[in-house]
Image 1 (cartoon, rainbow, N blue to C red):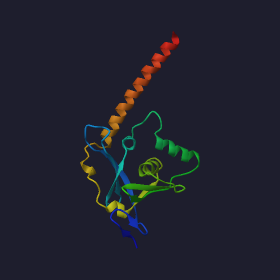
Image 2 (tube, rainbow, N blue to C red):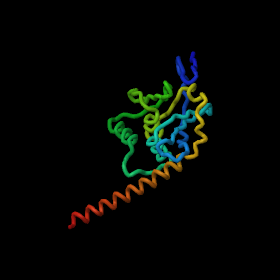
Image 3 (cartoon, helix red, strand yellow):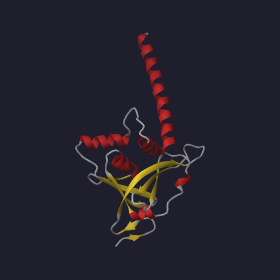
Length: 183
């Protein structure tokens, strides 16, 4: 029998298929203080699981969900490539527990426990693997993430604009370097 203790499950968990449905960013003028949340939704409609993530992870997820190409692989893409090169395959990812306001996840390859954001990015989004969470976590009341005004489309557009500026700066630096070498 499974017991729910508010925000975690003891006993045998009931795994529920979940899908990342988006990333949201809290409003505010100070970019350092803005909060990001990744939202996983139970495929059977039994609940949503908001997981707080960092700005880099939020931007990476937004770029991925919006299918924005980046000039170089992102960290999670490199990790997925390393697994493939090693002949390994991510079978599934499980958001396993919540302890002291921190979620933990297991990537089923060889079972390393890690951060849910890294696990989510390496499982269903890039490696075509299943993603599960304990039903007790998905059914619990969450934060008010729906009030966050910025979704992944805007986050991805902002990141894409920043990548364009960086590419232009790199191009200008490269032209200056070539001119300098020609002197």
